[in-house]
Length: 89
Image (cartoon, rainbow, N blue to C red; front, top):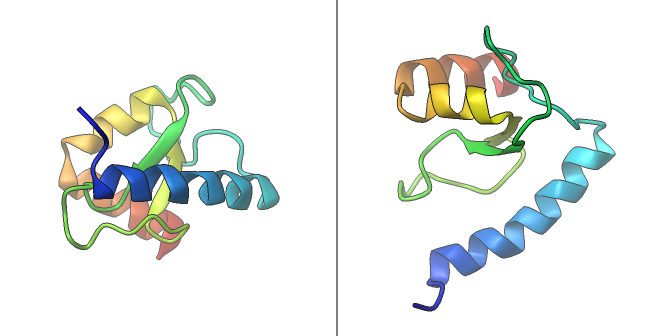
């Protein structure tokens, strides 16, 4: 199966995000929830799930998260919103 339009857009946008985060000096988990693994399994967490039309691949709508924190917020939308409000306003 070939990647679709959304996947292609994400892969392209992700490269720019990596540079932006590095320029800002963000190189470990921003969420810092209890149990945070700091830099283990880092990835971009989105404020809105990637299937949501409100999803944007921008600094304001993403944050760098370890595997543990990303998992915790992935299925708890209320916690996710609390974290993003704290980090990005």
